[in-house]
Length: 242
Image (cartoon, rainbow, N blue to C red):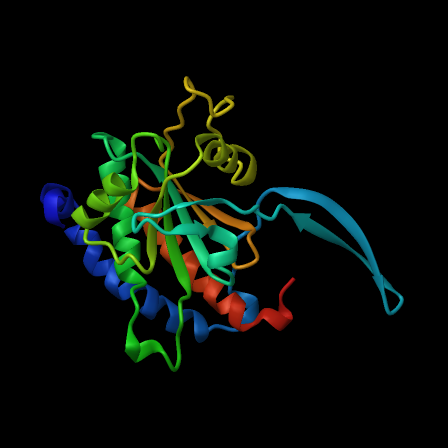
């Protein structure tokens, strides 16, 4: 992976699994009856509504829907996560390009997910993963568009399906703390505030959080891949879902 060859070697074992896992898991899950498939959980409940319809009453849990975030990606495009990626499943992490500790491994594992869910013309008629990857800079002042582009190119990312974003620090930090509900400690996004989290966050097409994963743990990253497949199936069965 370009300048990250040493990092890449650590992931070669997982890479083979990542290439095969989503498609094989999809067909295994498709062969199961609906009551045997456990879809990813919903996180961050906001309230419980009482619903009455046709004389029947039930309780419906309403979950937080992640708000919009705008910024600039590694191509210099002004982008909006909800508007521009409407109806897409998102996998979000947080990095900074000068990090020499956790970020290279975190980005390497995200690279595995990107490869696992790469565009494949053979799947167009039967399987569309509709997933987009987003890496948000926690050091947006230093992570310029040029720095993010160089970082992304070092991993040979697919720029169409994986954005590295910079933008307003307070907005990015608010997104992490108050929209994704990450446990990052208190802060206001000011000059002395700094977030460094290893989490991957899975967000469904309706912008509800459906999973948190340790992005440094290959096994947990594989669990994320499983859940992406299940969310794709949920989309196919949307008329039977909540």
